[in-house]
Image (tube, rainbow, N blue to C red; front, side, top):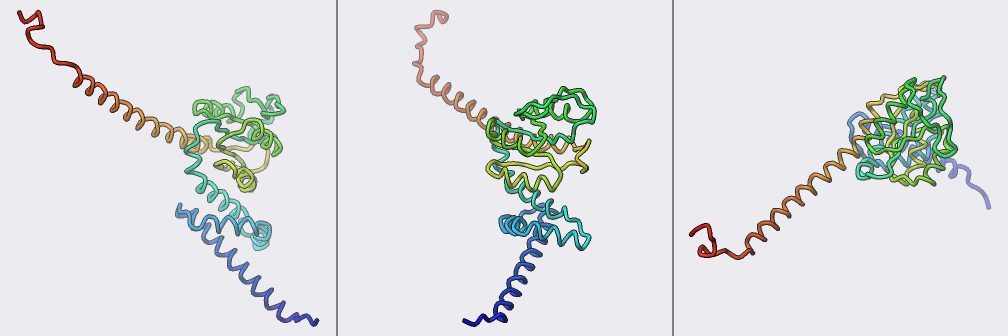
Length: 251
């Protein structure tokens, strides 16, 4: 059987053109989503960018473009897609912090399950973050590596998660933790050593679940109050009227 290489070549070129078009379209939609704060075709964008993640990063790097743009698009879309479910989770919430946030003089011990146990020495932002997280019912884990994430998910069984990392790590981590609603927060700088994070960004993420919980409780409380008033009114209506002659004070 004779192989028609010309036909195969044509199909290959057409397929390559479609791949290029889909990638360009996914990038453009992703940029639009970030700038306009609107989410269009999220599943399509995520599928294309994750499928051609390595080639896209290579192309961006080759043409001296910001290759982190691919990761930022992935993170922002993942955040938007999971946000509604994330807001509804009010128990077993966790906050994952990278160990690179620690000060170089940190003396915290590393627990085999929970990671580094912050002592609140004040040499980095982790102590403040832990206090803010505790006030909002978030469990904080300062993790040395990805293997700890698997341990935490297995042992602690969280229902929602906030992760702090660089865009590259976040895009990968959010994909791996897609079984629960998660939100990503960028580090302010890279380098894997004494990095920084905007604490207010983390607080805003945590507040999203706190505000939702409060908004849920208030209507329920108002409903209970209304029901109580209705019961009291019904009770008063059912009580028999006391005749005037039976009231000694009227004599």
